[in-house]
Length: 312
Image (tube, rainbow, N blue to C red; front, side):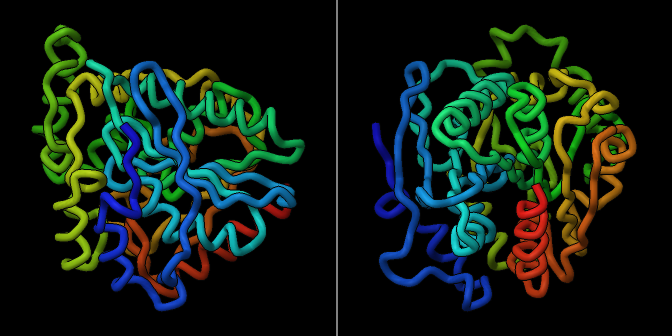
């Protein structure tokens, strides 16, 4: 089944009133909405098409957003800068119609890797990935899997296997550690069929700093109000990248760290940042929260991304 943001979701429209005026979309402005078949499901893709673009940028969301929300703060600004931008809704999120009985984090990496391979085959220039929240590490995992990515941009890089990272981002570290350590020991046939709202498992109340915007996104089942299976969470905790952090030197990485991120401050990224071997840089986004809707952070993010891409 094909589902469209323009007709079947209003949260992305409503959230724009919390964005600076220059980030609000005028009537009729939006990316193309495309669909691809994956197994029994219909994956939703958004594209700002530009046949003359020197670079393609692929956006990955995490567990609290979706492709349209990423396009509001990152995709559209990058398209305005002259790049072709592609954003994908993973199973459980956005307008993707998930018909699979069970979904794991390995499936997310497979889907992202297939998209990178397809876009690289159709484009002679560099492929860059951008990830927000868990999408940052997803971008790294896809880059390590495909070896086709020329640059990685992330709002944070959470290593789910790191107890230190998990504790630093959790509001209840002792209880959560018990839960997270127990999940991989449970039968996959059982936890694969148990879906729970993500906001019960992670610090979703820190998704965005404006309370009204937070209320809006937490009630949106396509983003902050989404539910996932316990198997998905368990598989994320135990996922091993194709290239260990200490061995990765295929492309540079930029961390776009929101200054007022109450969910994943730099201390959450630090266990990954200290280990990853490649060239890396960090830019702090002033006054910005986890899902950044604030200035000057948004303008600083666009400027940093464009400079990073142009250096590739």
